[in-house]
Length: 111
Image (cartoon, rainbow, N blue to C red; front, top):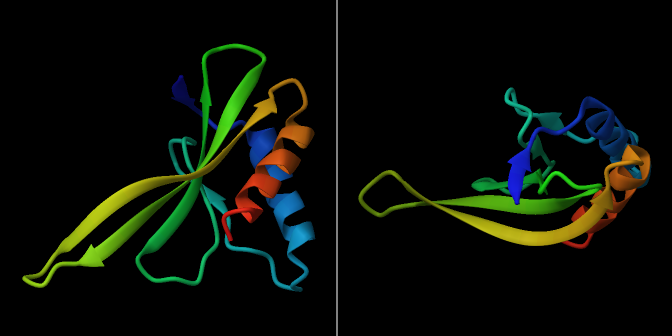
């Protein structure tokens, strides 16, 4: 499987569904990276950076991966960064609205 670009329609649907599911009056801090390969997810923890990636083998579905990077300050200075796969779900590429809903529900399981 190869990490693929996040389609604009998927990103918009994901952000809308996530904000609707949030229950807070303020929108979540969600954005897509410049290269469109990561959708940054909201969090309140310094040094913890969750994000979403799409992987596909070119078929009718993709795997949504909810990933995180954790940065820990070293005693002598600098940071150690580790990457984690926190959750994943297979989504249909033919229905990006449904794919976004499934992706948000997958993300919620990591909170």
